[in-house]
Amino acid sequence: MENESLRIDKWLWEVRLFKSRSLATDACKAGKIKMEGSNVKASKELKEGDVITVSLNPLFKTVRVKKFPKSRVNAKLVNDFMEDLTPQAEYDRVKMINETNIEYRDRGIGRPTKKQRRVIDQLKNSKESW
Image (cartoon, rainbow, N blue to C red; front, side, top):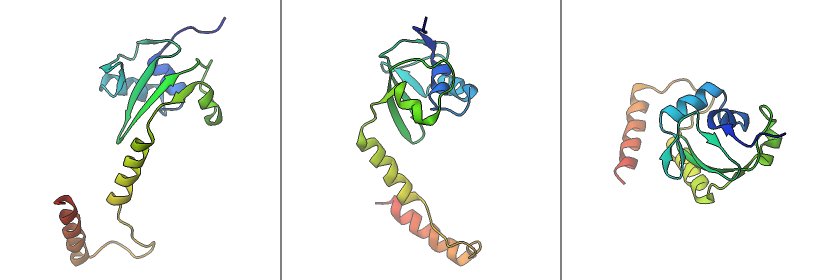
């Protein structure tokens, strides 16, 4: 007989949304896991078809429970157990954040000098005022 329900922290770990079960439990305690708009405890029992919103800073991922694995699954098999409902606009937003906030320095060039750091800070501050 297959499981008809499973603790949410265990399921989040088994489908590889978190690296450890304790991280999944901590995310529940911190209010980063929501079902139907409200925070859930780590001991909340999931059923097939439940929709979960997970805050994986800065991404807000929405998934639907398809099935319950017997143990942690291979990354290639994750789609058998959950359906990703996250809109493409959310992935685009995260991509834009990553592209605009990261500075690039060539490898081996060393740390920026005091003068270069001032210029970098000026550029960052001028972006924030947009």
